[in-house]
Length: 328
Image 1 (cartoon, helix red, strand yellow):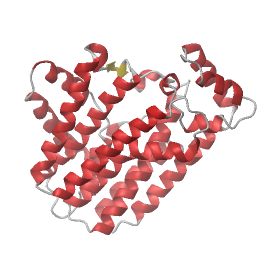
Image 2 (cartoon, helix red, strand yellow):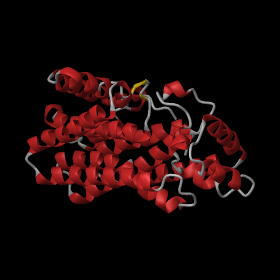
Image 3 (cartoon, one colour):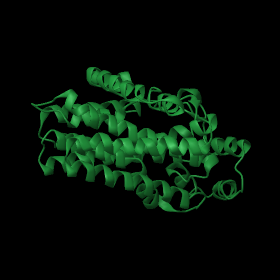
């Protein structure tokens, strides 16, 4: 599933257009290298999934786009900051089809830009003068860092199991999905019980999103340019994703897969071989089954939300993801 923003959030077109304008104004106030680097990442055509979820969960009788834009922008800005830091750690050459900052400039410049964006997240959220909002984003930020650290610790660590994998992606990916939904609920005045449902929706959608991303990384048929990054990048980095966890259970290929991941350097020929092996196991199908399980959980939670606008919007997101991944 290669997500197209226009298809996913067509019903949020006006809100996302307003967000793009806000982000352009934000970058216009910067100067020099900082301006160039932030423009090249923040305005590079991201899918805006997280602020899209925020806008849905912020729906209500008193919906005010101008009031909500700083929060929506903060969500996209912190997401962009996390991607910049990810690229440094993974030594990625491309992001969204463009050269990464550390590749164009250097690692110190990339770290500075990422750190600057992290701080701006809280500058924007502080405008609401609501400690609960700052607490929510602080917790999400901590989980982002913890998830990245856990991923580094478990690289090339075979047989870590599905439980460890889910813990990592719940921190690293779902944290921003959860906070996006929760902030929308808070700023729309939803009761705590409803905010918790939105948070749970974000968790389940985030898990399914990451599983899909892991599957795409190992799809040798897809055109990698559509994602703006090379196929097999997780393999190259030694990340043990869900398809690999399942593939390691295959007796026929267990040793060969283990040998690839225990090499000091995983080369292109190793990636090519692994991408050939995977279709001969049930690993990809098993991972898709888990993806659909979590999408089903997200749909179940969305259906239990009382406010009609929020419910309908989140169910539309579920339907899109289900359609793009092959149905329920």
